[in-house]
Image 1: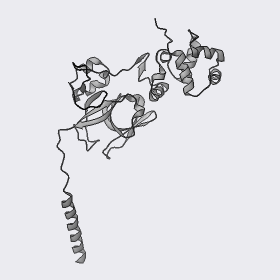
Image 2: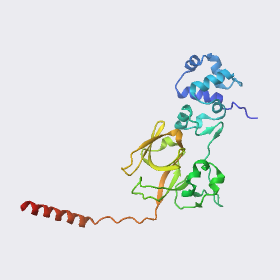
Image 3: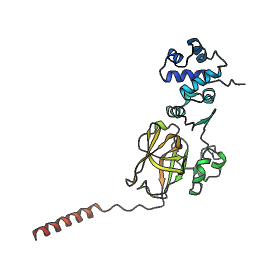
Image 4: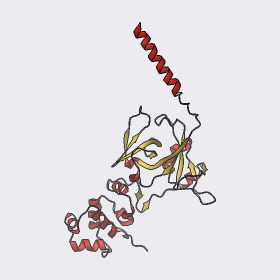
Length: 266
């Protein structure tokens, strides 16, 4: 049987070094002897006391379950900050959330479509393979590598992308790599099932902006975000309005200028 403290020793060493503390620093802060800390970090102490576990958990703001079962060295900086902030949105115990996908008979990933009628259920079923299995699926040529889904958007906040368009987006695993003002589908915990906005990561918050200047930007806590999908393309059933003839516009301006001059002469 695998030891339940498989990652404990490496995790406490990683957390200490991440804060650039020496063993002497942590020994003093947690009231531990230097020898005891060395034994804990090296894995020589196979059964840390409950008091020592509580000290590490409370100081680093990481649950004891995560200290034991999760290899913290594999997490992104954003996920680590979320853990330390007490927002355990990525894991419960040793279960780091894995993106659920479906595949076609050739073992290639499908592009699942989340229709309007399924929007309300996506928030609770986004990680459920059975829920995803019930969504419409299709394949699309020339998609970049990664997992993609299609989401319908509503409203005019992202004009000129029209209301009712379908956005195809790629799954973002590491949010800190998102460049400022990247268009994304953001899956939220709250009453809104998901929103299509320009995303700007700002510490423990995400700034969401619209293309339509009539809508003010706003922020949401990172802890309220379930998934982020980066815009790839969109499709719409609306035919675009033709651009005005620039020559005709120029002539209209000249005519107005001439009319104005004529009025001044009178």
